[in-house]
Length: 214
Ligand SMILES: C[S@@+](CC[C@H](N)C(=O)[O-])C[C@H]1O[C@@H](n2cnc3c(N)ncnc32)[C@H](O)[C@@H]1O
Image (cartoon, rainbow, N blue to C red):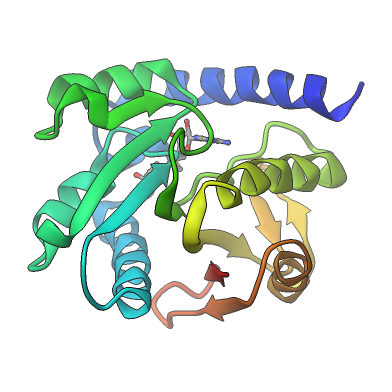
């Protein structure tokens, strides 16, 4: 099977996994596989801090890729500098995009089905987007993730900020969660995209945020 066919198949499987989960738990962190609100929001905090550090003034256009039920938009609304952000959320799952369009404080056209920004933005950000694998084949999953990242990169003027689960050695665990060897991932991002930093936070020891800039 070639990479494009595999990507289509993965996308379908991803939709099914998240629809099942969301149907069971609804619009709460557990509905998109986070264990609790605190851990979901601590990832948002890191991403927002990094964007503000890279763009200290002016309007920041962001695409939230894998926006789930729109929780980052809700989080950003409470930030003191929220008016600086112009937000668009994308997700491959139509059920989740429907939920965003129905319940968000933002207009429905702030959300769309997709795996990359439809228009150029300053930042593409992804929180937890590539954590849940739908294959046990590590090489296939990593190629798929880079295929998605490449699409986002081409539409990101300043950079991409995304988090990953990390481990000493890349693997997909029994629960189908993808863990990366972060230094390897950083080097690949440097080769394929641009200067890449890894941000670690003591309270999230199994998490790393990658900040890729032009
Ligand atoms: C773990 S959830 C996180 C949702 C949200 N970012 C949050 O933190 O609440 C991952 C989300 O990414 C979406 N997703 C998975 N792969 C994707 C891809 N390649 N492009 C866009 N969305 C994707 C899923 O449908 C799901 O809504």
